[in-house]
Length: 194
Image (tube, rainbow, N blue to C red; front, top):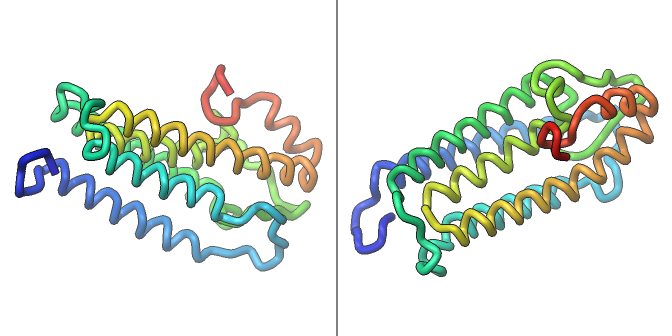
């Protein structure tokens, strides 16, 4: 809600709806398991989901906690942030769809699984995590607060990078040269950067 307003704005309602849709989709997908694959120590879902939850709280709360960091053009940022959040959701869902049965929240791998190199995986190694970061930054932008955007981005990126480190060790150990060849031609999150 905007400061001084008793009623939520249209963008506030849409941000709330976006978060509900996101949580519902994540909850549905989180139930998927691959019983044939043993989970990896340190590969639990809590690392990334905890960072994303904290980043989202920072994104939503910074406007009230650090009002000096409020940005001008709040309406434009709100609509831009919503667009960015939905683009992140689309990328995340595309990743779910592309990996199919191989997409799990726990880090697992089996030697017989393929290395997926199509869909969003032809562009970056971890498009799903890029999607999550994009959603969080988009939600932060809807609040038009620089501290919220920066804080949410740093927390979400840190959680994703830590998770990626564990995941890539697993994939290299289990899939070996096949994953190494795939990884050589693609950045982890942002083409040309990392």
